[in-house]
Amino acid sequence: MNAMLIGADHLGNIPELLSDWDINITRHITGRHVSHQRKQHGLPRNTELLILFTDFLGHNVMRHFRNLAQNQGIPFIACRRSTSYLAQSLECCFSK
Image (cartoon, rainbow, N blue to C red):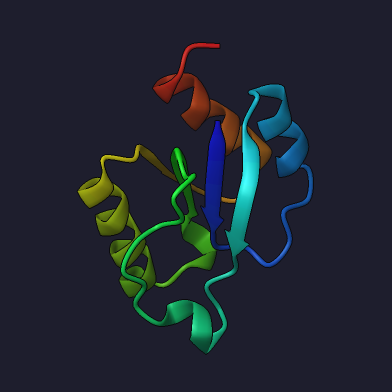
């Protein structure tokens, strides 16, 4: 599964956790740069999951990407940037 990550400057151990779930990071946007906050018209074509790290993301940026995912029928996870929070969210959404 291909995932796009929004938020967080550094991912730390998150790529390893996602790899354990057979999830590939196709794109990571920090959301801090002005260019990242500009409105995009859609998510990349190969995106199958959107992960939003809420503690490093403004409300408007989060709302915009969440709406893009909903419009394209792409599932999304919104959680804090922590491997434990992400693992818990993945377990709730997907059974391993």
